[in-house]
Length: 350
Ligand code: KG4
Image (cartoon, rainbow, N blue to C red; front, side, top):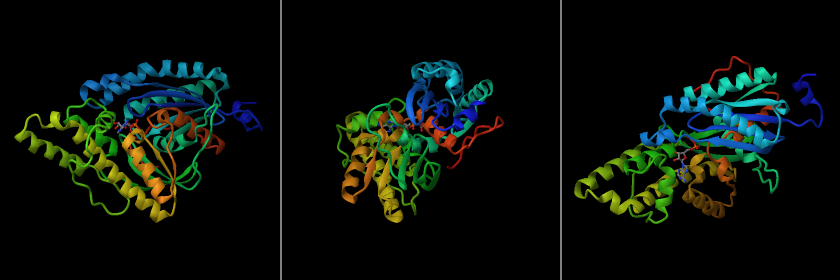
């Protein structure tokens, strides 16, 4: 009996090894029957001095990290390799060279172990991170249908989630992502990469209403952040002409006002989406959902509009393989397997 047949039997555990390498984090995780056993993430400091991710350096670092990271995930999970039922990997979207490392590794692992391979869309992974169960503690996943505000370095989307594997993007950015707006504006203020967490920290001491920046007028539920970035840049350039110390003297207020504007843009469309769809089960995902101002604004709006709000654990909002493994788990239940000729994709919708 092969392992696929074995797991078809009632009561057999399903153990998924997840692999994530879409950008600059190499991650591996083990999930058994939806419960997290390990989640190992190796970040890449090499990009800091360039102020952004350098794709070639990212792929090289993934090559170095992938074997030790997977090894550690299996050891930490306390399982042996032959207990793994399937390997789930991020097929895209992301940086092609980075994705190739995880994809090739997953294919090799699955082939050698004689187990199924499962491809995962990175964005779907961010959403399904909400369903990761811990060994102990409460499990409070959202109920279907729900809206997910997915905000990361590469994406800003509003997703209508009808079921684990049934999702529809009902709004998305037509240019930059919210995380990019944080990072690019932070860079012009001289803050380190990624700038989002630095803006968040400095904003706590600043006045969010001190400066105003342009907001997009985009119809429907779509976002745009490139105009804000340009308006921020010109605002700084004009003020620096008058006072070369303008950024240093006003850094906290600049961060607070920038953050306030980004959150306002994000929340306006989310409120519109909730009204249009009649869905009041609201969730958030992606790296930017770590932002303290965004979390507070979501909570305030939840009270005001009677939303049932679910904010995921901080560690599952950033890029990680646990979200890939949990998506792999639901695809395994649905028997959605991938063949060895799957190739990564850089861009796609859900
Ligand atoms: O989902 P994620 O880890 O991966 C990518 O999409 O690459 O998101 C990373 C993004 C970066 O733009 C980072 O600046 C932003 O999430 N980020 C934050 C915060 N923490 C991470 N942005 C604002 N406030 C934060 N606290």
